[in-house]
Length: 297
Image (tube, rainbow, N blue to C red; front, side):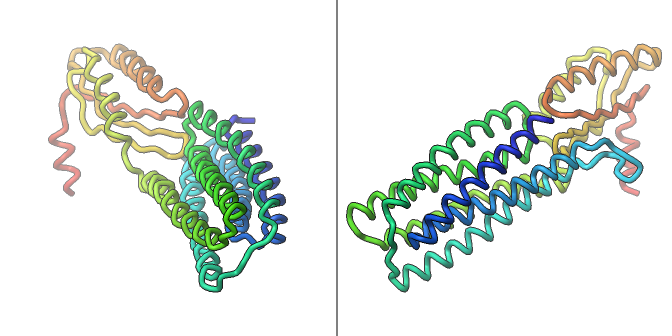
């Protein structure tokens, strides 16, 4: 089992445990903040299950129907995760505003504090684990999951602090106020997840830094006289690179092919944790102007 899939199994199991704990205490205490956290954990459970099946499908080999594989399932999963986070945030905002207007008191503050301490510790270990997996694999789904649980960790810490203040002061309005702040923060944190996923679905090019690294490799190869039509895109754990490499007209096809293989190896080394697909069109002369004219028609 791939490390990414193992990570989704761990996050799914953790989310299930947190849902049971938080929902039980949230119902009995009537705390909007704890219930908000319970709902968020329930959505985490659904998302983690979806992420597992998404990663399972994304790693399937290309076939007659999907010639380039199913890598775009990963950014689709990330976009869906961001949307779900946003909807849950709006629900939390609605509940918090209702309680703020109605001035509903809460009970079971001490029990709520205990469950949030347990939740904070469990979530902290999960965030550390997911961050390590994300750094090793560079997988977008795991990055989104790690970011999501990181927001959970922050909200759990905020809830724990607020419950302590409530226990000390008896001011219950802190609970819905905190629920509003958590909802707003969840919306804020979901934006970059959705944005990154949408850009990948639209075949956005690699970052400027990554593009420059590719250019540096091509310019360092003396046998390549020039290059043009450099195009890149990322699809989940797959990276696609294509370009035209201009060689001296006197070079043999064998030598040009050997040099291209060497360049491909260097390019793949830039993205060790990704599956890199490289297409090099070997030109005996610079036909960039001709290609530009053809692209107009």
